[in-house]
Length: 406
Picture 1 (tube, one colour):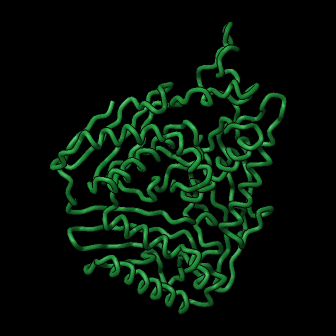
Picture 2 (picture 1 turned 180 degrees about the horizontal axis):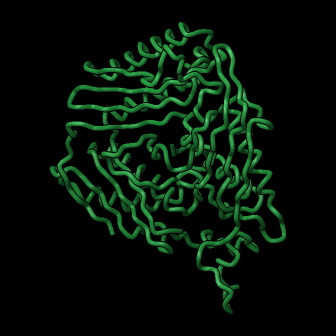
Picture 3 (picture 1 turned 120 degrees about the vertical axis):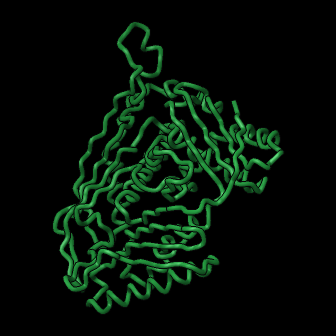
């Protein structure tokens, strides 16, 4: 059932937006979990003809320890990598080398993020995977006729029920809205510019664990940033200060180019130059010094944390890309909202709510919120009905990593 609701769409007097950069421990955990899912999915799809059951959405990173001073830096205790979740370990009589596959992916991923670390000595792996089914499997007579008993050890493709009929794995929801506000665009633009490969190639001193907290009150914008510097590329305190000043000028340009005139910028507010307490790191991320990251604690799938907007606490990364509602419906709701905005030129919100076991293409509740002065609700409803039929296409986009998730 599709419900159309109306409300007055207006810009609030104030708003907060947060963006955790690509090197933040929570963002790293999201990205690693998703890479594990993509690599596992593509492996089983190529070898067996289907994405086998798995979820890695409880992956975590526990901070190591580092020693830093101007001109040098190193890890002195390893970063601990928690590979948590579940995965199919067999297909028929074939044993799947799950552990080898996932450890290889994790090492390659983290080395790509931090080329200065040695994956063999600077990473410590804790492998906690299970292949137990969720409740539903019993030892009662006739249970062998179902699929639950063989959820993570399918005998053949006949045990992969979603190949015959896609159903929701959970009672959950996905939400989306469009368009971004000016503040939301600004928070994304600042972090993505500073963490772009083009910028880093010219400014290797800048770390990736950049955090942006953006605030707007009426037409006044306030931006607070944490910007790490990589000690190997910073010779002394004067260079550190020069890099801060350079960053400030760059951010000012980004803000002015967004058409914003009234603003303040605050960078590394915890720095104490007198005591040489600085955001100086060996790797460019706080993951080297005790900070921790977990899937689902960072950015939502639009790349932002927006407490004043419609949002869900689902951690989408690492979930099964075929039927897991916390991922598929979240992407679907965001895509449908974006398309409504592009087609009808109206701000809107989309919520998709499932029931466990229900047809995936028939959400229990679909709620579309439109501006109260919009009058073409029937056309929007028909448009959404057609878009819901395209939900299975999301899997391919996810496996090709063409969808933002963090």
